[in-house]
Amino acid sequence: MNILVTGGAGYIGSHTVVELQNAGHNVVVIDNLSNSKAKSLNRVTEITGKKVDFFEIDIRDFNALDSLLNKYKFDCCIHFAGLKAVGESVQKPLEYYDNNVCGTVTLLRALNKHNCKNIIFSSSACVYGNPEIIPITENCPKGNCTNPYGATKSMIEDIMMDLYKSDSNWNIVLLRYFNPIGAHQSGKIGENPNGIPNNLMPYITQVAVGKRDELSVFGNDYDTHDGTGVRDYIHVIDLARGHVCALNAIKENCGLEIFNLGTGHGYSVLDVVNAFEKVNGLKIPYVIKPRRAGDVPVCYADASKAEKILKWHAEFNLEDMCRDSWNWQKNNPNGYGD
Ligand code: NAD
Ligand code: WQD
Image 1: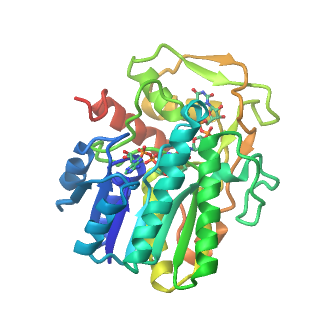
Image 2 (image 1 turned 90 degrees about the horizontal axis):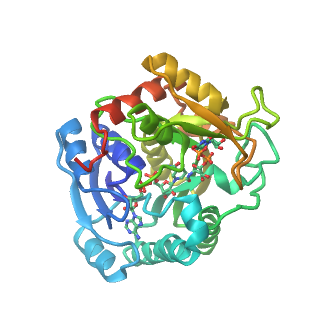
């Protein structure tokens, strides 16, 4: 299939481009490089041996999208482009609503105009808020997002649902990711956060590489097996392959479908630290700090719907994720910035 990938230079996007090319799809990437480097796509080519057609385009730029869509005929758009830093979204809500929500509306208008009515969207488990059901099924009601970033994901889902109601020629797959970590086994592509990482794994790898002194563990008084927060960490390659499987649903005219992409296993912060230390033979110094505002105690998926309908399940375990995250970080201590 001919696939348009928005945000394809980023962390999940670049891994997905690898899996798409390996599966024989033709890929065009657009990205405004606001949180990535085009170098990631050169690395993709080193892995797959295939060139990536790349255009530096902002999804809020209707005219640029329009001329791209005049030139290429796409079977599906996989839409990763968006800002994703939870804390920053609290400081800069208008930027987040403009970039994520207005950007997606502009993208949808352009796709609609060119009759490309197939889209796969990067949603997030954060739309469940503090989930009512554990493990979380897709039927779990959406919850209150505690930050503008999460609100943008929930709003975009609603916009896409309304679009589908208005025109059932659309096929829309909403993928709710749990916590992606890990990197391609080659060590050539991985997560490249700007500044101080917000997320657990990049923080751990930066402690391991000597950029940060110690990890702060946010809270050890949750009602979990060791008191620290529990999440469903998923290898980014598994996540990327989930998109390739979702294309089959699109091909079969699935209409609007929602899938959780997680492993179904919950691990605590200290489980991750221990696994990282064990598999990489390193020590990660940490201190216990108060709970982080907005964190939920426990969040992990029931991923059986994706297994049943997409024939997809996660194959990598926590040790694989810790090994591959470290392999990326130690080979690229400054990310793509070298
Ligand atoms: P990322 O920041 O590495 O990738 C996003 C890409 O989108 C970047 O390359 C950025 O430059 C680009 N971009 C941002 N705004 C754009 C715009 N207006 N026009 C064009 N390009 C733009 O993030 P990621 O971790 O790869 O996340 C990909 C998607 O998955 C995002 O939508 C994110 O919200 C979502 N998601 C991520 C996680 C996670 O933990 N990483 C979890 C759930 C959902
Ligand atoms: C995981 C656990 C922290 C950092 C966020 C977004 C979500 C999605 C994924 C994009 C929690 C603890 C973390 C640290 C710690 N992103 N932690 N010390 O919060 O589950 O999800 O990223 O869509 O929307 O909310 O992920 O990696 O930040 O935290 O103790 O330095 O690690 O408290 O229990 P989170 P995370």
